[in-house]
Image (cartoon, one colour):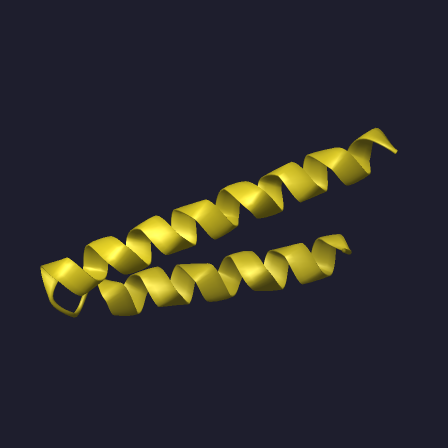
Length: 52
């Protein structure tokens, strides 16, 4: 994964979080948890690539 790809994905996750803030709290919480999980996985991926 390139840093440009990573940046694009991070940007889109931010957009999803922005939309989540405008909907019901139950859905907001589920989306927030999902985005945090994806973000953490991407961070691990980037750190792994940096070690190569």
